[in-house]
Image 1 (cartoon, helix red, strand yellow):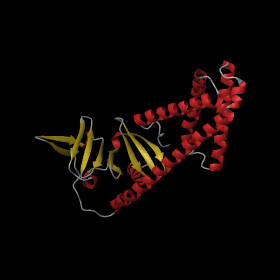
Image 2 (cartoon, helix red, strand yellow):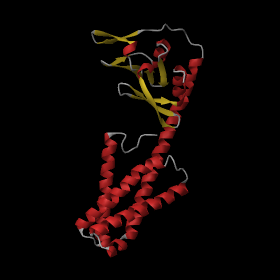
Image 3 (spheres, helix red, strand yellow):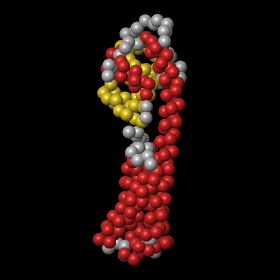
Image 4 (cartoon, helix red, strand yellow):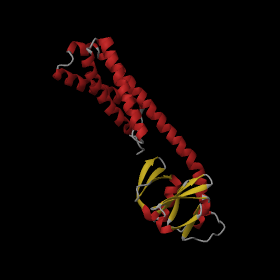
Length: 266
């Protein structure tokens, strides 16, 4: 399951929190101006109702991968609004914070405002999902071609057992057993080891030819040492996350995952 757009990074979490507070503020103002609710009660009301809607909106990200029929999603949206309004009404009534007449008078506003927020959120989710699929499709095409080229005869290249990296006046010798993975960065690559990261001016294709079979190119920008793989997780359609024992996460394309399975005899 793809990462949630609101929790995939600290910046995303902050953005999501600010959006929830902004929606709370908007409903607070509307309750005061439209329904005549006292500011303090309107604030509690908004925090409760938008809080419930935010929880449902967070879960909606996973829902769109299960329910793909738009008619069913509309029905679910209506049910979510009804449930949120019902729970909010029950809590406010029991707490005697908002009178029944005031709540019923503001019911059309609450429903339309909540449904609008839900529709905007789902539209944003769909746009993210579509963008990720397009990106995966673009990456898969050259990746598929490049990995398939491995089946063609190539110039022989001696298998290495260590890598030398020049760093100013020093030369580091990296044993392959200590190498977690290699990631591309233009004409350079970054070598990841327990003692740190090292940059070397060499192509991924060159490494791919010279490294032993324990190393698999899972993506056009990543080569992984299979001895350090902890688990493989489905990330999206034809895309996977490779979790290493040191906590590093690498992305694998569909063709890279197939090659990995072949190397691991799965």
